[in-house]
Amino acid sequence: MAFIVAIDGPAGTGKGTITKLLAKEMGLVNIDTGATYRCVALYMLQNAIALQEKNKIIDSLANIHIDMKNEEGEQTIFLNGKNVTNEIRSKEVTKIVSQVSSIKEVRFAMVEVQRNLAKGKDVIMEGRDITTYVFPHADVKIYLDADEKERAKRRYKEMQEKGIEMSYEEVLKNIQIRDKNDKEKEIGALKIAEDATYVDTTFLTIQEVKEKVKQIIEEKRGK
Ligand code: DC
Image 1: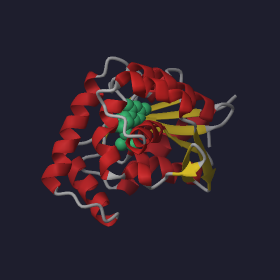
Image 2 (image 1 turned 120 degrees about the horizontal axis):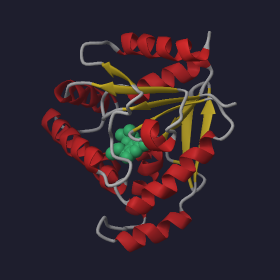
Image 3 (image 1 turned 45 degrees about the vertical axis):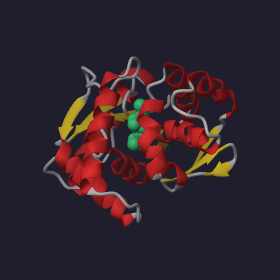
Image 4 (image 1 turned 180 degrees about the horizontal axis):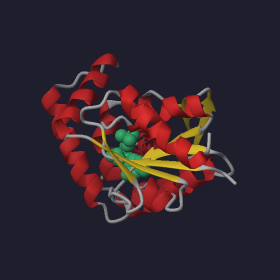
């Protein structure tokens, strides 16, 4: 039986970083579900499809093929055979991705992609609706949270390190908009699953969060 670790939470809680580190340390396959929505957003930008053109977006889903390769915890994302690992993190994609992910048909299609990518593997997956919708029967469910200003600070630092030009205020605004969008989605809204372990990361370092999450997984998995 495949073992499933599901992690949800808002942007900037360290989900991505922790999932990557633990995948490597614990021999789990890391499936970045946000990346699937980012691929749809990138496809729209590449094909000049606007957010208002809902029918075009829905039609284009049939032309979007997403694949992920994992090597020692490092993940490479392919959109229609092309490596888009870095491109999907661009400012332009980030700006529209939450709205793209709110479209019901996009969610249905991407959840299918995510479940297929996980099939038969021991996985660690992070996102917004993994514990509640994608894998409601996951073996381990964790909800990571943090104060919004702290999350904006973390994201701002990450952007700077990647050389992406954005002010702290802009990052904070982005986070607030995304939080609102993520929590108010018709389907797959971000919420805390009843049986998830809640971890507040505001005053914890990445290392501390990682150890805490690792312990929770080990308890369930048996070392
Ligand atoms: O985690 P991320 O920033 O790469 O996610 C990109 C967007 O996709 C974000 O706005 C939330 C959305 N998302 C989602 O709706 N469901 C998921 N399982 C993962 C991400």
